[in-house]
Every structure is written in C-alpha cells, then in structure tokens.
Image (tube, rainbow, N blue to C red; front, side, top):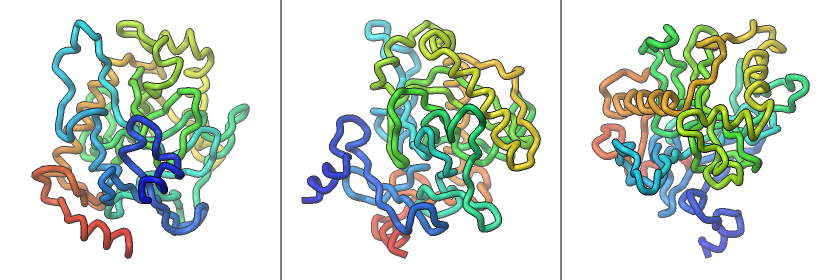
Length: 302
C-alpha cells in the first residue's frame, strides 16, 4: 500500500524520482512549512548530505578519471529542486536545521519572495542545489577573490519541464556563471535535465554554452539580467559577476563542483568548522555526524 501511495503521489516515475520521496510538515507559505526527504527504503535522510552528488553512483564513487571513449558517457549529477520555474517563493534547503528540510526562507520574520524582474515571472529556471557540495565561507576563491556563501552550490536547470520543489533530477552540466553577491562567491551552475528533449542537442565538445545560445536563444542573456537585478527591488545594489559576466564552459564548471564537493567532505568529517551548519546524516560513511534511523525519525516528528 505504501508503494501505491507513492505512485499516486507521482513518485513512481523512472529515474531518480522513484528513489526518493518527500513528506510535508506545516502549511505552505507559512514559516513552519518543511519538506523532509526519504529514500527508497523509507528512511528519513538529509537532501544536503545523504543524496549522492554523482547520479547513478554508489554513495562514495568519484567522477571517473577518464570518460569512456566508446560510449562518451556523460557524468550526470543529482540536483535537488528547491524552486519550480515561474514561482516567486524563496524555498531553500535549511542548512542550519537537522536533516536539512526545504523551508520557505524568511528575513526578520517575513517570508521572502523574489520580485518579478520585467519581463520575467519569478525564477526563470527550475532552481536548486547540488547535494554534497559546500561553498566554504572561510575559503577565499582564487578565481573570484571572495569567500564562499556557506551553502550548497546553486543550479539553474533550463529544461522545458516545470519541476516540483523536492524533486531530485539528474542533470547534465553545461557551464557556470560566477556571481559575486554582497561580496561572496556564489557560483550558478547552468544545467539541463538529462531526460529533456533538448539535452541531446547540446553536445559540443567543450562549449555546451554555445549550443545553449543556439537552441535556447536569449536564455543566457536573461539569466545575466535576472541575477544582476533581482535584489534591486529590495533596495539593494545590482549584483556583479566574475569574468565580466562571461559563462565558463562545462569543464570549468565540473572543476568548481569537484572543489565544493571536497569542501563538503571536510565539513562532514569535522576537518573544518561549519559554524551553525547541521551535518546530521544517515549515510555518509565515517562521518562523526552520522545518526540512526530512530534519531532521524524523532527529528522529523519533533
């Protein structure tokens, strides 16, 4: 009956979706709303720490050193969707709460919504994060000269489907934009869902980004526009970009992802101090923050 229930909720689809489900606590558009995650075994998990970065990997498998020549197989990443495209509520992984559910971000007790930046409506991509990555605020990025923003690395998924908050999507990385947000490095990975009809068309050897310009004209320009201006309606200055707003290619993006994955590993193995970040996890082998299924269940029930 549990499987029927999950299937009825739309979790029966193929791919990563069938491996994870979510459970809502509290009311949407309220400060107490939380979306908790479960794996295929029905165990509560952290979407920040317990979902592997590399799609289709065993929990600890690294990026293969060489791509296989015969299949030219693409390395795919798991993305945790926080905000569906065209919506305005600022939903995010709660990094400072145990098990890191998705919550509605608030400032000074007020729920946060992004303004509509004319001519766009809400977020213009499915927006989310790569699990098992962390932009260390104590590490100065030698490319941007700024420290990390203390969050998992952000992803803008440009496929045609509107995704739901809490969905886990396997994505192909296309490039990266270096945003400098209030003095912090805030990388924005540009990616497309592996099952998107356009994904196969975007396959230039290094310059997927050029393919995006060909197949989705105007989208990258809109992305620059959006990130530059989205805080202006709140009375803040325009954001700036590293590399004069030039999108860097896939290989560059994958290097950034790998380095944020290393920072995350150091965090989970207590090699660096994460401050208020909650590292409670169920599946990270050798992590001192590992907790039992029962502990995880009581966190959710509390």
